[in-house]
Length: 259
Image 1 (spheres, rainbow, N blue to C red):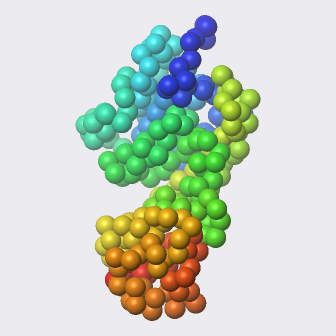
Image 2: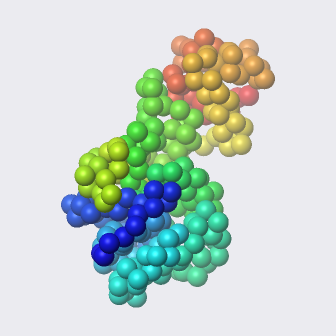
Image 3: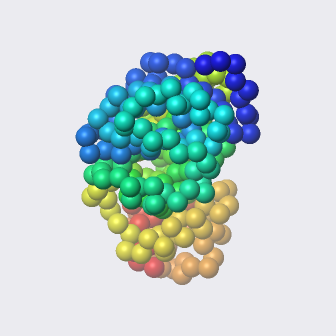
């Protein structure tokens, strides 16, 4: 790729390490019935390998300066859509394709990682996500109770997905080099998950429980029936003096199902 003026405002750090790309591809469960979404293809390093798989690829790129580079990828399996992914009518795009499995496979721009994930979850029936994100952010996604990384987003994502590390990516694997290392995480949809009776109540409970991370449940859940919550917590040998970070996904579900 010829000299390119990378835009920090767009989070442009292009992956150049072929071994990392191979690990991403190898970790994906792609079939002939798959549709793959890639957000932020950049110069197309990952895109070039994705189009060699059995699935069809739809890439979303905000920077139209990359049209010349991406147009070099000759494949009947690829559609590139230019524009801000967060503003695109995703359902309209997906309606053009016949597929049985939907994947998000991408090196996500760090500055909008969470909004992208939330859009995907809210607007699609995603089966698998394999995404590269800032290492610290990825650690929160898969964090377990009683760790400093564990928060409301950890609970929310783990309600829908099993989340595992694919590989750690050194900052030297990018051009230009970012300040921090990255991580590739794989989200596999839970098809037989424990369900909350009322997901709206469940998600509000989780969010409220983590309002002030250093405060206990008694302080964060003042608007709830604390006696009822305490009775449920006692089943797990816990009480209202515990912090939200000590509760597992299953315990949050149990509380929300009984309030």
